[in-house]
Length: 357
Image (cartoon, rainbow, N blue to C red):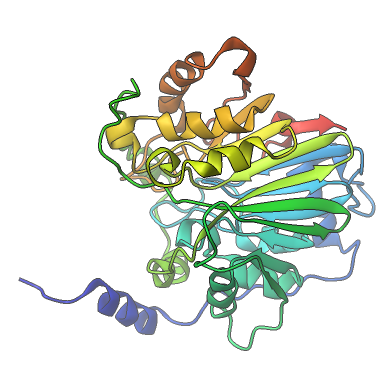
């Protein structure tokens, strides 16, 4: 029997698989690559000549798992920064280079695991974007790139009290970050009727999109990247509020006061939240429902529910029925409209989430 520790195995892979992901630097504003990328990710909201995005639109383009390209208030941001490609290459029709070519002003990291922050360093170095996250996120992401030059901005650290808020303004957008929890399994909640849910993994994308050696070289070294704390973000411009989080933790058992913090935020127009998590094995989709209830959003968009890691995950459509069942448990006045997002048809489909402000 092999006694090799997983950390030693990953360290060996890092040496065997070669250097870190490197991307071409992004040109000046209006560069042809930036115009092309913005037109692809944001559609008609991006000017065909300059690539400038319309200030009166909010556009979100899904890049798999919980990564979104966001055009808001005339600026471009990334919410998380990883293109899924570990067990299937090309299932998500995007590349880290294209995310860098968007020339984002900032990258906001929800937590540091590979499926959320694995491409952040290379994208930030190529584009000059500022990385926002905990101090641990910032340090780990700078460590992804030799002699990194991109700026970072720490919003507390992994020891910041759960529920603490941080306020920043980036490119005219007001942002609140709230420390919360990563998904985790807890014992069955006797006070809740949520049902266990765990879809059977699907292999289809692996058959059609086999992983390439290049993608494995870029992804495997990131497998042990630490969580570094978890942040929920709310973005506000006049007349519009977006809340996004890339995990939904068991606040009921471990940090119930955070529900009051979330309820105290300005009202949310669009809520993008992770619904896949470790607690679905025991408590179904209770934790995502609790986040939805606390935020009281008008429109809910599920994330982290697609087949981002074929062989272990399933397609987003498998979450439709249990998610509708959970939302039906909310009082009618607290029940948001549900905008389902299915893979792979809704990847890079800006028309699905384009809103006029």
